[in-house]
Amino acid sequence: MRSVNLDTTEMTMTTTMQTQIGLHETGCFFVNLHPDNLISLNDTMEESILTSNTSLLHTLRYESTHQLYPVRQQYIFAIPEIDSDCICDCPGGDDHCAVDYAYKNCTGDNRGAFCVHTYHPHQSAAGCQLAGEADICCKLIVKPYQNRRYVAVYIGQPLTVATFHYQLYSKQQHDQWQMLHDQRFQAITGQSQRVQLDQAGLQLQLGDLKPVWQLKEGMYVFDLNGDNFTLRHGLPINRFHEYSSHKLGWLRWQSAEKRWTVRNGRIKLQAAHFVQTVNCLAQEYAETYNADFYVPGKDNGEKAFFVGHPVQETERWIRTLELVDRSSTSRQISVEQNQSPAISITLSFNSTVGMTVLYHGSELGEFVATIHLDSHSNRFINITAMNCKGTLIGQLYRSNMQQTTELVFSSYVGGEDRLQNSTIRIGAPATVNGSRWLCLQPYEKPKLQKCRWATFSAQPLPKVELPHRWTQAQGHCTDCNQISVNNFLKYLNPANWTQGVNGWSEALAVGLEVAFYLLLAVILWAVCRRLICPVLRWTVCGNGRNNANKM
Image (cartoon, rainbow, N blue to C red; front, side, top):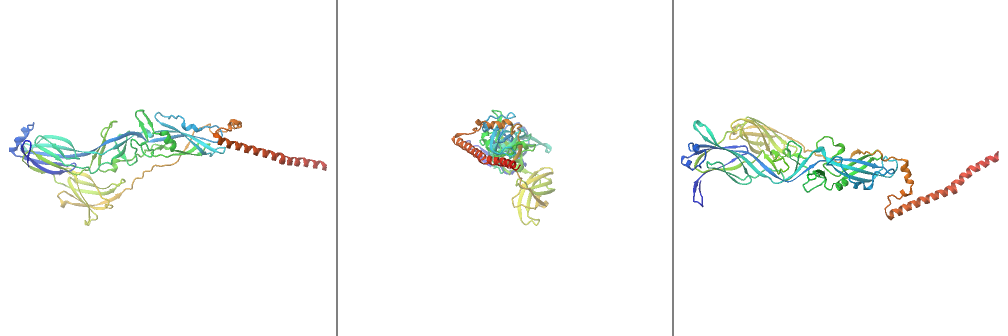
């Protein structure tokens, strides 16, 4: 191809070739330089070698592709473990649960724990000696479950980066090859890129490659205490400005104050705490919370808390996943793909050359295959190929009659110059819902085709249960609900009769009750004096006189 620079009117002759290269594939390009074009090479350290050799071998390997996700929001949280200590106060006796109990200052038993008081009137007086309504007052302590910390992150749209490995060899005497250039480089695949690979006149143009798979933008979580980085999702997670008690992340770590806190915790926990008495005298009660993603302190045990599914299990296209920097200032998450579409490349040589594309043949010894529908609804064909290399071509049929083709695919298994065993995973459409007849052959060798049955298996969707149940507990109050002489005598004091009376309406009601009981007492006194006492006197005295007269 002839190119003319309009600014300098300089004309150059270039040789251009277009091809495609897949992930983990290596392209080899054998170049014969014309002697007249050797003088066009730049002055380099290898010039003395190049000018005495007219055969060059360029190799380009598509090593890997990964996505860099920016972290836009981040905070540290824990799974709340809520422990309660309640007192049930029977009617009568000393007052252990005052109305203002919920507004008293509360301090946690452990430094850094969040503490709040709750008050629950109008409870059943089950087990109490006197009838009436009981009161329950509780002290709630919220602390991190198993002292584990988690990090919630919001990730945005990724930047896709591909890694290539380029090498240049020169042919020496006796068919020996000498490496002249070795370079690894990265390129953004979201847009077309031009790369000057060496100073021997080779330019590379990478085509635009859009990502086929990527993580959904949103909230994810990982364990800060874990040795291995495992990103999880699948549960509702609070964003940085959200504090819902029905999502993960409502018990947060305040780094400035170095303590755990719940935003508006007193209001939320007092409204969320529900208590009912089982046996007030024995301090037995049942409780629950209008909240999610917490562990009751009464049955915490040692079992792990479910915080979501690992991303690498639900997204089969992920090879590795890591935090770029595990420090507190980490701002990126790297996801390496195990699958990628082929990328188009254009090679340009600043001279007239004769070019030959070199490649190894493909081979296949044997294979076995299964079709899976996993618990995350990923449907794929899992193939284990033995003694294989190069590119394998596959066809999936409904039956061994090979009349209806459901899927065709190809996969590069590597190997290049040696046979190896390889595992291939191919995505399948929803129509593949049973065992199928699978045929596999090496590229350009249809006569070596092999066919086998691929059996189908399916796993049910995982069941994630977040129990909302009432838990039994028992308070600790040895002096509560004990009836003594002092408890009885204090009610003989008229000053105690009006305790708890607020306002004229309640005072009027108390006055009417007192008047009613006084009237009832007068009536009883009159009945006893005018009716019961005379009858008893007549009965006793009259019988006595009758007995005396008979004698």
